[in-house]
Image 1 (tube, rainbow, N blue to C red):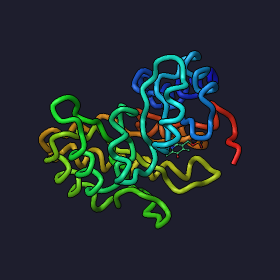
Image 2 (image 1 turned 30 degrees about the vertical axis):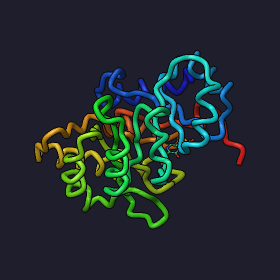
Image 3 (image 1 turned 135 degrees about the vertical axis):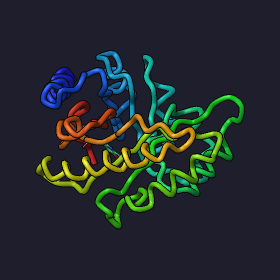
Length: 223
Ligand SMILES: *Cc1c(COP(=O)(O)O)cnc(C)c1O
């Protein structure tokens, strides 16, 4: 945990960024509630889970305060659960899902913050909007009253070499700026969620505001 913080800080120094502008999401899929509680005690303030059911089982058992983010693909029949469990969804990957969330939101109480997942590598195996379609989708989603688009998220193609991710991260930043330049009502893309254990330093250098780190914090997953 301390070493992850140091590495984020050093990447910020290299890029001339304020370390306060980068927040770490501790990705806790397969990790026990006890281990998550320890990470929160050690200073992790955001926990990321991929699956609704796993989050439901663990959140009640975790001690300490943290924000919970959904970072995995969501099936429409699970939408109803997310408002109680999560404070943000980072993996909004279709207009249909955006509409379903808008429909189910607790109207009048919360406007649910979302990040739009972009399939930057245009991989068949991954969810997310294709880069070419993001702007049009954001314009549609911006009309939905009960979600608020706060930024973009991406998982680039896996590579052993973190430098291979750089052009994908840069592309996500370009898409962000392109959408911002449109000045769409209600759309403020402050967040760029990108970078995982293998490439988070490159992501920070390329402007990440959220880095989603699992193994470097919790150790290798057993599966
Ligand atoms: C598992 C996962 C991560 C974290 O991956 P690590 O390699 O363990 O850091 C980040 N983002 C998403 C969407 C994930 O599914």
